[in-house]
Image 1 (cartoon, rainbow, N blue to C red):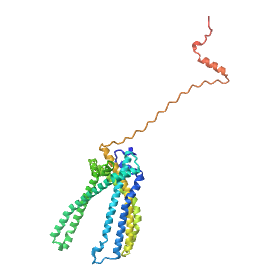
Image 2 (image 1 turned 90 degrees about the vertical axis):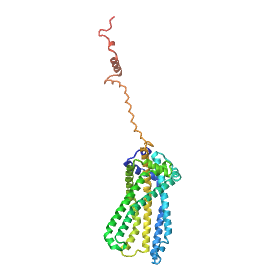
Image 3 (image 1 turned 90 degrees about the horizontal axis):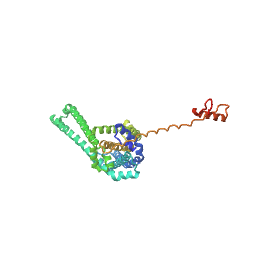
Image 4 (image 1 turned 180 degrees about the horizontal axis):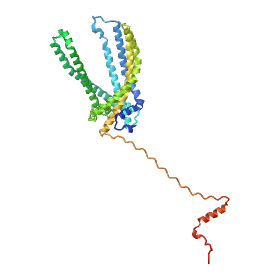
Length: 394
């Protein structure tokens, strides 16, 4: 398997080898993925259950106008703390899963066979925190870029709207503003929003492409978090469009398969509570606290199952693909050589058949053995030894 994987990959090779690795990866990665993701998934299910209890309390005891938002938000503090804890647990579990899958895939690519405890030690002691720091740093940078682009493109819209409002006579000229400026204002909002989101997606994808193999570099090359990011920048230099195309197609195939697998389970778990809520709404009744609680419970179970299945499937396939991409980029950069499969052994030529000894002549019918021997002697005697017709003369 190692010899077959240590080669330059095309798009078809990436898809084929990534999915062909699944049976070998899941023998060890499946229990690790479940144990790594389960605490975070359980915490998120607890978040949704707490939210259901909070909404049930508000529905059972409506808030008076004098109490305002203070009472509504009084029980929201513990919920925020639980949300932060669930996010942290799921984030750390995903980082450990990524480190383990990269270590296991790298061993398969190189043809090594480390034991299960050795893989756990490599992922836990050497790579887990490095991968977590990388994900946190890159996620913060991507979020900052999105906020900055949206803000920069939204500020001209805000100032332009204020200018239009001032020229139209201030806030008291609402009818004129609504009749004359509303369509233009809506077009500006939609246009700038789409432009800002397109620009943000382009920058985020550029960042993903340039840092695509930072996790395999940190795990397999023993680089620290930021050295791994630097290694990814070096390996991806000059190949952004090829890497983008491969990453986009592979992520699209994985997401499509993930929707097929997780969709029925999520639908089966979450739909009972949703149908109960919809029946109350269609009947024109106000949903009771119990109906809301049932809906939130079904939603919690559906979200938890969906997160667990998505984490197991995508959390195993995507790091395996990134490790294969890391190997491909190193081969193309000339750092390692692709393994050459030995040619098939030629078939050995068959030995020529042994010559058989000539068979003795068969005796004629009704011929004795003595007569046959005498005839054989006469046939083997040279012609020079044949007696002359007249016999020997003195």
